[in-house]
Image (cartoon, rainbow, N blue to C red; front, side):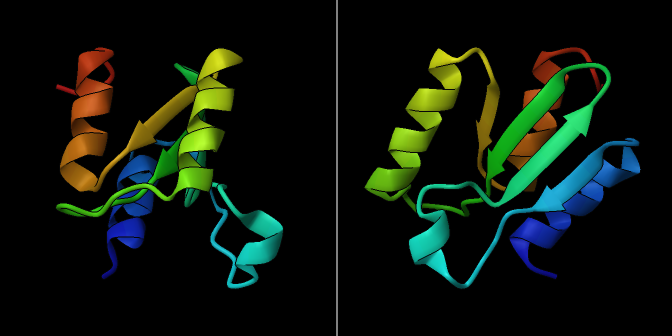
Length: 93
């Protein structure tokens, strides 16, 4: 199972609605994160799946900066980081 699939499955197991924003036509979606997660407890969350030492591309950094400036949730990492993000907000233990 890919890291994106693991993270999506985890969010779904908590009752979240998850949309994959992955698109092979990157020219049309440059900068968009891998997942859009919607949940009644914390609203909208954009999640960029990265493993280990993987780094964001410049267009991904630009997207993160824009959504954070708009007050929208943004997370980065694989399953352990997703769990930590929710734990920090008291959503999971």
